[in-house]
Picture 1 (cartoon, rainbow, N blue to C red):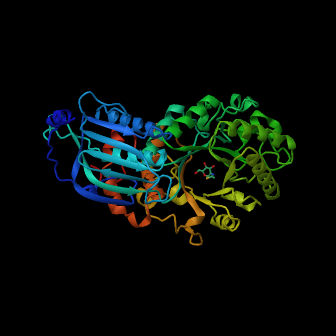
Picture 2: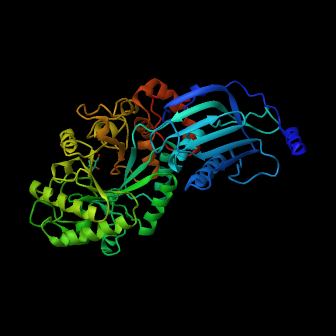
Picture 3: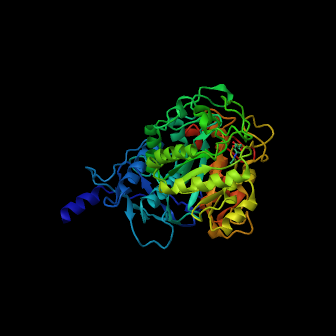
Length: 515
Ligand code: TNX
């Protein structure tokens, strides 16, 4: 044993780490607590990752980290296999039940000279923790500290957990269709910023985007159009499952939305019996314009509810989320009486399939279960009714969080109905006090919607989403006392090279002191 030990000691280089300061990191979202110890961990070709191998998901977190390190700095770091030469530095990803933090996504990170120790209660926490670690790896190696290139990670301790349990982004794939690969890229970027929900707006007047095997015309007819006259598209159930799995690997939950009873022109065009022919709704035809509020299902027909039972049942069967979003917004072609009746009946169908409802704020006018979640986009008085009912709130106020609002008057893409949203006003508000009457406990979290009337490809999506969505990651994760615009802009500049390497077509707002 003594001989083996000295043989190994012989190989070990003594590294003179440069002084570092973990406190001046550019981590987004800002962690809860950071304590620098002013030395470093040298990531190099002798580093290995070891993970817990008994609790589900930990090894995959290690593999994801290794994959991203390879992509980021072209360094191979083995996971749970020993190297032939003795490894000198280890990254441990451990499961523990004793963290001094309460969130299931909490983690602690100890960065020392010879080891990095990441502790988390479950794989989701570990996954959030490795995003922090990724953001601490310098772009350039230091090639003079040792015989091989070394990426020096500043040493210290990070204790971190999210302020809100629901941190979402929504993508409207109905007004314009986005391919599986495009959606995957957006999800992977959201994962880097610790988002944990991805809401897909799957249906609207201009298109139906999810295969329903018992009602094939929904995609044959309803899937073949989009805003502006393009060919549309849809996800097969296999595509949807692949997206769910891809997101789940990143500890992101996909929440499907079928928008009802308005925003249903594409469905009624596919199956005309759904259309409310006796009311205010316009006769279904292929719609490629951007108008809203003209379509409605016939809420008095039992056949409409058996249709919805099939649709919701098929989607629920391939969607592990406990939520099913029923839309419910802008139903100007449905009478209020019909609307309230409809929402209550559809809620029962969703619950029959084992899910809880999420709906846009209008649903809180109906007599619904406290388990149904209310998503504020416009009318705050609906949110107050929701809270009185015992429902929890997701905040997506249009004038603060709509990623499809223009940055300024010169922005070519986007809309303006909720106002202009420059990068600073997107960031500078407090979700906890946005609606004075609410307690923090009433709020599940926040979600940034991206409606796609004016965007039709990934480049355009990225232009409206970035960098605002990065700011929303901090609004969802970090506590208010840790948030500060000046400090945030400096950290955001630290993300410029990441965005460029990932070929993200971000908007280079003049409010940010970019390099
Ligand atoms: C309002 S927000 C809508 C959408 C539009 C969006 C455009 C909401 C629940 N409904 O149908 O796409 O404005 O900003």
